[in-house]
Image (cartoon, rainbow, N blue to C red; front, side):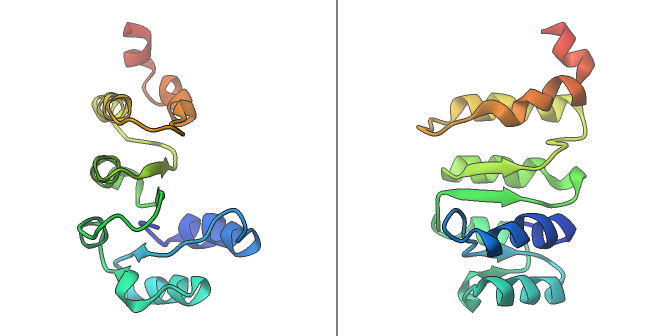
Length: 137
């Protein structure tokens, strides 16, 4: 989990607590120490998998299959690209980016990454977020 704010803790984290047969968080990156510790306590995350920012967690060896990015909207792009480059399946909450250029960059990056479970459904919101760019394609 990158970003243990309202959605990270209260939506996806909460879902995970009630569906541990489907999803279990094993690492967290969150600059707010109280949120980071709360999320870690809820999900029994070991201290060596708790980080204060996404650069630290993404510098580690790959820990699992998927990475949830729940940072502030204007902070989605860099961790998403870094996670894809690392080989994670990326769950990126909407909006995936705040500029049309960043939307295109994320889409192009996702196309380059081989993944047997690759699902482009997150890009279905592309036309809503970046209507001018989508119409130009």
